[in-house]
Length: 92
Ligand code: HEM
Image 1 (cartoon, helix red, strand yellow):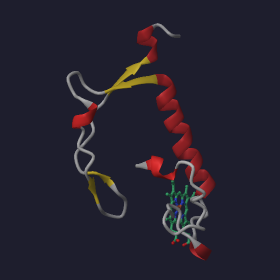
Image 2 (cartoon, rainbow, N blue to C red):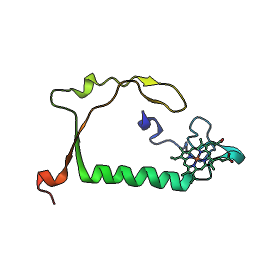
Image 3 (cartoon, rainbow, N blue to C red):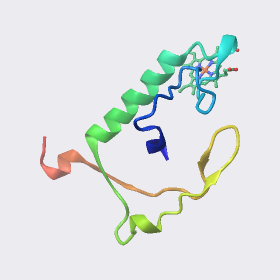
């Protein structure tokens, strides 16, 4: 639920312990800027170049968003989505 941080003053720079993806304190991740660039840029490219849709007949309300717990949190059930190149829509 990333939207829980909307309109919130909580940041990820190690000052608020409810959200520390890069750790905190003197052993905090030194690769934070490199890491952020390598999340933001590929994500922006994927969103820019593809149309993303659920497979035919799948209702968004039926998506199982159950999480598993480990070193990182991930979805318990795989998410299947169709990526269509924007070129097929004749936009470029
Ligand atoms: C989105 C990407 C990344 C995430 C989420 C991440 C997260 C973390 C976390 C949680 C820690 C432990 C901090 C602590 O103990 O308080 C850490 C440590 C570290 N990270 Fe990253 N990291 C990322 C990318 C990178 C990159 C790109 C580099 C190097 C180019 C890097 C290098 C390091 C190093 C060397 C440490 C150990 C720091 C120490 O123990 O003093 N990380 N990282």
